[in-house]
Image (tube, rainbow, N blue to C red; front, side):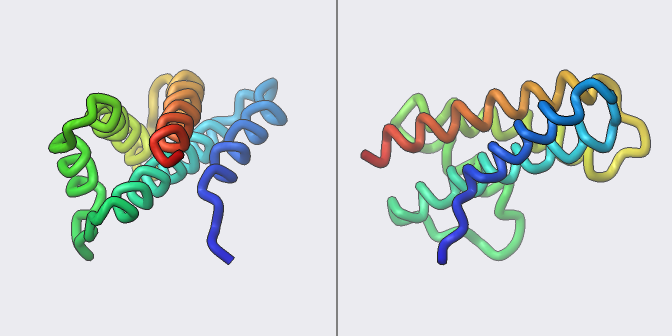
Length: 124
């Protein structure tokens, strides 16, 4: 069965909703990361359905570059949003200190939901 990457968006929303009051940084970091990967994989799979052949190395940068080359301004916007989401994800996954984790988690979640909606519309 093919994994539904939108489930990561729902998971990050649920994590934030359930643990929002505690303000635990681990919660925010997890939500940042899962939201990014949901958006990334949704966009990647859409481009694959359009003939994109992702490389084995540096696929994150290559996907953003491929999105920026598209004639569709919505796809170009997804590429720009993925750039920021990727930076937040790297901070969440690798940095010992991260400022504004809660805001970044909310921002990544909102952007992931938008990207999912745009790709859904483009796929129909």
